[in-house]
Amino acid sequence: NGKSEDLAREVKKAYIKKTGKAYGRFSSDHGAHPLSQWLREYRAGKLSFTSFTHSALTHFKLEIEKCESLVYSHILIAEEVLEGAEFLYFALLDHQNAWYFDADIELSDSLFLDPSQFTLGARINLREWEGEENNNYISIVKFRNDKDLSEAFINFIGFTDKLTKKHKQPNL
Image 1: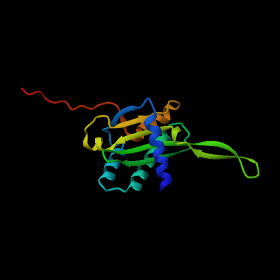
Image 2 (image 1 turned 90 degrees about the vertical axis):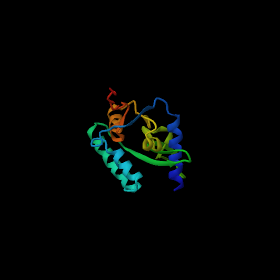
Image 3 (image 1 turned 60 degrees about the vertical axis):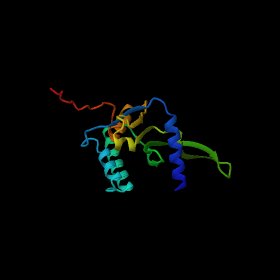
Image 4 (image 1 turned 120 degrees about the horizontal axis):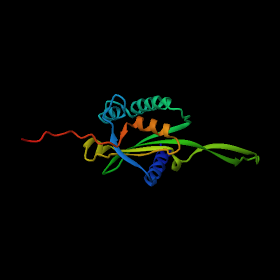
């Protein structure tokens, strides 16, 4: 709906402005990092977006359970289709606490999402990934204050910045 689109647009703007991104690609170890396989099935029409995200979030939950971090967040997964590119965004959004006065001038608190303050994020350039035009089709924003949570997120995405080159035999 419109509010979801607005939230995704705000997360995208914040993601683009973030500095210190790492660039890479999917790991070739699909057994340990199945997100790329599910994404391929989704793109081929074998999985619905709901099924894809459910599988992805179940896997992310398993990755989080391996670390000692407590996570009370929502993860936003949004696909963006533009004329010249297609992107898939992941963002871990934390609730923020705010205080306000109600109609009786009683102090109350409320939770809200601030899309500019997401904890972790990733963007996959889907056309570059499918076309393999570029070795670095994933960018990722890590959470510097929680190494375990960042590692869980990286494992969930299946992100690697190491290039696997196939060795070519020289012609003799």
